[in-house]
Length: 240
Image 1 (spheres, rainbow, N blue to C red):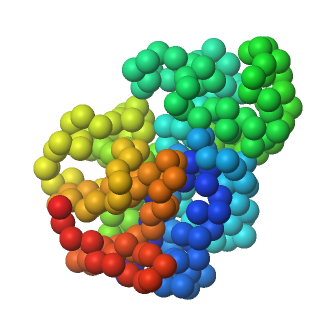
Image 2 (image 1 turned 135 degrees about the horizontal axis):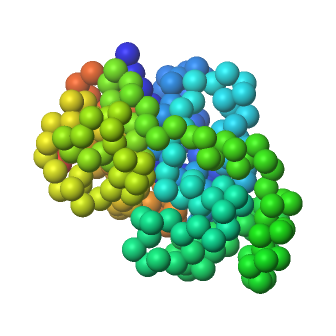
Image 3 (image 1 turned 60 degrees about the horizontal axis):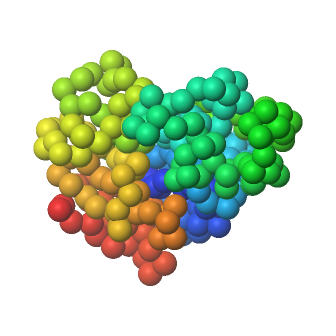
């Protein structure tokens, strides 16, 4: 039994396709692949990423895509344009925050981000396919596999999975990253960008910083071992 997992994508379609190819080379075209979320923002082709993953699922590929905090922004803007994610410590709106990457996402849909809010909303509603917005809004918050729990940011230690708050699942850092608690299974997550993926005793962080020009991480999880997949093959990850 094995599970493949991919870190935060952030609009990097070419990197996503390359990561998938490394997985196909290792496990074949029908490999079960879980994605930790953050499909959109910052990178150049958020639209392409969403469409590619949707097409794969429609074609019957066993691809699981969990919801990241960034995946909430676009559908929320289209449906509730004044909504500000309570997880943002800055209190800034998605389209106003300079570091969230809204401009890149909007451009990928052919929308000029440098226009008044009313015009921006009108153009975005016209340009973003309704099925893209529905897809992002309906992404599951977690995926439980016999080998791991896949979730975007992490979990609140000691809280049953069914009772976890969405805000924690897509935003948590403090209380999870610094915890050595046994979560009952390996937690595979992203959200907190590192220079490279790292394996800990109770979790695997796959956000290697693809949003910032670094590779998109792909790993294979098997009983008792985790390997990072690179162009040169498998590399055993050791517990940090």
